[in-house]
Amino acid sequence: MTTGRLYPISPSKLSTWLDCPRRFFLQYVERQRVSGSWAHLSMGNAIHNALRDWFDEPAAPRTRERAESLVRAHWTQAGFRDAEQSGQWQSAAAAMVWAYLSGLDPAFAPHSVERSLGAIAPGIALNGRIDRLDGGGGDPESLVVVDYKTGKRIPSSDDARGSFALAIYAVCVERSLRRPCTRVELHHIPSGVMAAHVYEPSTLQRQIDRVVQIAGEMAQAEEDQRAGADLSEVFPPRPSPLCGWCDVRDWCPEGAASAPKKDPWSGLPVAEDEASLPA
Image (cartoon, rainbow, N blue to C red; front, side, top):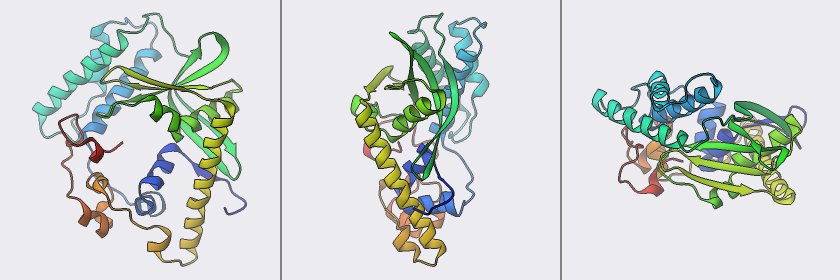
């Protein structure tokens, strides 16, 4: 990895590189501007924002009507086929949010919500925005990372264990807040499933060591491209069914040829092959 400036790494940046180096180049190096939106992202953003506001306003009445009003306040029709489809999914999202919140103690208060934290690892600057931090239960000093999921795929404990994003969040908590953080949780709002993992120090360190290694590959690719290396060698395309969902496929002939472009509402939870859905 190039010495000097720390190479910045976020979970989304890392995930993009692992999915497709060419998409990474177009999105993070060339910074291609894209237009349009996806309905499943509009729904996910509304759910995330509603949950944030629910906990950010402890004095507000914690009722079903309040939860539904928060979803409506953050709802947009971007990506939906029409107003009717948008309205149907707004109602579905409000029901999901209330089903999730009604399972919590009305007096529950997290440590913080939507917390942006960072940490330094060898050669890199880690950063991430954490959906929620909870108290650690029996250990008054410990914190628990909670990451909301709103897609079709229901996460498992293996997903939590193998998530680079959760590992980055846990390290950022420990190094920024000086608090132990060994438990991480994925909360799937549509199903109510909670998938958790508790790190041993050695396993967490292995995850971060792997992040450092991958970051080195990313930084080296950028350096080689600036030095004149062939784009296909340092940022090769990785055609797959995911190309149908790619926001930068218009600049990638290989991706455009590998899968038809999805309709903006195709990511909503309908009967489709889960392997072809975006994460």
